[in-house]
Length: 497
Ligand SMILES: [Fe+2]
Image (cartoon, rainbow, N blue to C red; front, side, top):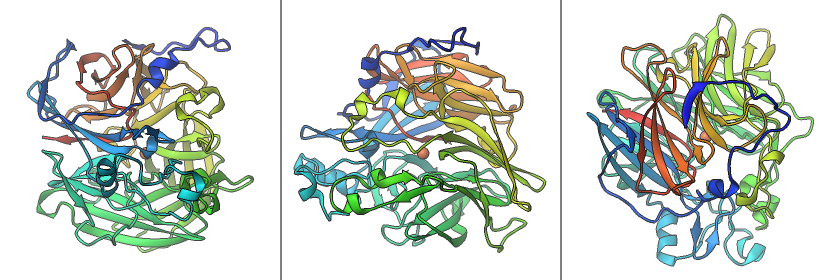
């Protein structure tokens, strides 16, 4: 493991595989313990004493039950880890989210629900047909809002947890803002103060032949934390698949991928709902620019603008330049899906399109869009300094592949200068696999002052490590071996002390 300025690979035509498949696949398993306030020390380096707060991570923690494996890790039950930093001390706690589905399946000792990504109940299509219940698995993201921790899953309501004990308080309707079961995105964006006080901006999508996007803004600080400040709803033609979005002071930006949804195989018990999504051949993706309340275009209808081809789950950031909205996103050539007859542990990375960071400049008056590739290296899970959310940012931090081109598991943390293309790399290869990096800024520091925290699957010891890097040059500050073996996670966040 080392930090170095990224050097081009000499012979990109004959890439050496940077990992062992057994190491990669060994991350898939069940988390079988829940730990309380376990003190941890670094096996290398020192935990920075200026780092005070909690890193929360969410992701699938249960992938097998009663001998049956999930069809896709995204169907695994949400398990939240809290790593609490205080003056160089570190404590760990982890808890499964007590969802209705998790409690019922714990009791039964077998799979009782279908999963969106293809997990079926035992008994084949006959046993699954016409069971269109959703199991809210609360596994996608975890964010702190006031005195509540929200475990998010985009197709239904959030679960509220105690931010200290991680005890599940229950489903949250956000103080009556949501109807029971209403969709609530797992990708809130935290406006650092574009209109005065900071806000959490998020959305929910009601899909159908016409889809409705509900945009909501919540207060995040003081006694009003969690209170709804503004909302609007807009309907759009077609089935909307929106996992993430981006914000600027004036706009909420959605990228509607050109996909179709045919629910029949789902209803008939043959496929999971997400396996019924397909890229629409010759279809046209669109940017939906929804004016934010309190911005210069408040109250106006959304602007619909044709977008480049490709499929996007995640955006890095967006900002405004005059009449242009600039949005930086991770594009795939096609919608990546694991079919009913495929085993997720045996996927061939060569056959799956890689995620590539691109910048689109949208002129919201003329409707023109230009795009440029920011890097040829496969990446995912990118973020800017939270103070620059929605504003021009010089740097992005992301998970990326070890080699310069082609699709591979994520093994490095990369810092990219979004202006010059200069990059810095910290690598966990050959035996380590990275997850989403969380950039924690140093208060009062420069844009790239602070730390980058990430959980690593350590294939050598078949366990999870916490790695702390200096954000500016990705030099390794500390490595902590966690007393847990956590499957590849999804999203997490930092809450300052
Ligand atoms: Fe996501």
